[in-house]
Image (cartoon, rainbow, N blue to C red; front, top):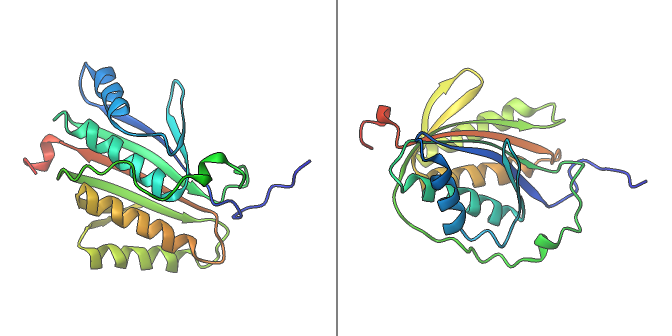
Length: 196
C-alpha cells in the first residue's frame, strides 16, 4: 500500500459551489461552464459541489473565470469554496501537471467583488504569524476590507482579489509545513454593494 505523505504533491484543488440568486440559476451556471476553458484542469461536479484540480495557475484562473462569467449576467452571485494544496490524498503523477503555464482564460472585464477568506496552514505551530503576514499583504495591495471573527474581508476588482488570493496561497505554502487550506466566500452584484 502506498504511503500518503502530507505536503509533497504539487496539485492544487478547489471545491466550490456557485449560487446565482435567480430562478434561472441553472442557465447561469451552465453558461459560465460553457464560456470558460476548463481543459487545463480536472473537473468533476456532483449534486452538491464542483471540484477542479491541477496546476495552481490553472486552478485559480478557472475559478476566477467561472465567477466572472456568472457575474457578467448581472445577477447576484455567491461563490463559496475551499482551495487545498499538499493534501496526502493527491498524487504527483496527475496528467494535468504536464499542462503548460499559459493561461487559457483572459477576460479583463472589471467586476467588483466583496469576499472573505480564512487561511489554515496545517500542522504549522506558527500559523498565526502566517495569517497576520497575509492580512498585512492584503492591506499593502489595497484589497483589505475589514477584520472579523473567523475570517478577513477582502474586496475590490475581481482580478485584484484573485491575484491577492493566489499570491497569498503561494506565500503561505512556501513555509516548511506545506499542507495548506484556504476558504473563500464571495458576493458579486449584491444589492448591498451600492452599484459597485
